[in-house]
Length: 151
Image (cartoon, rainbow, N blue to C red; front, side, top):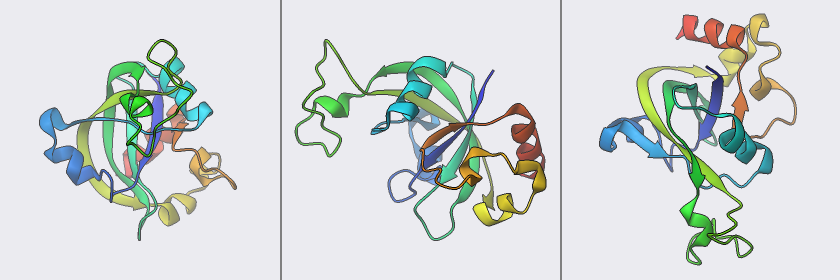
């Protein structure tokens, strides 16, 4: 099993929105960064655990735990000319962008980025590194265990 941190803007999909969705599952669509895409396409497996992270909001932080519930498949938004995620170079025969499905495991207390920065045990957590802007990052098992212990 691998561990991940996946960012979502609560104005798009919050942890509460996920909890209200059918089967408490969301398609993780709209990723347009090759490294994040490669994580989903090449490394994520069903059952991998995910920290659901609220970003681009008043108080960013980990808001819950989820799990990958469906392996990567082509992101349909890349083919839709009306979508802000449309990619004219993508075709159904040669898709460029992928998504996975993520299912809620549990909502937790919000662990803010400020709080995360306060733990020396998390000094190498990718989201805390300068210039780290990826929406999906791997989490080391020791970091996962530490964070899960403070939730």
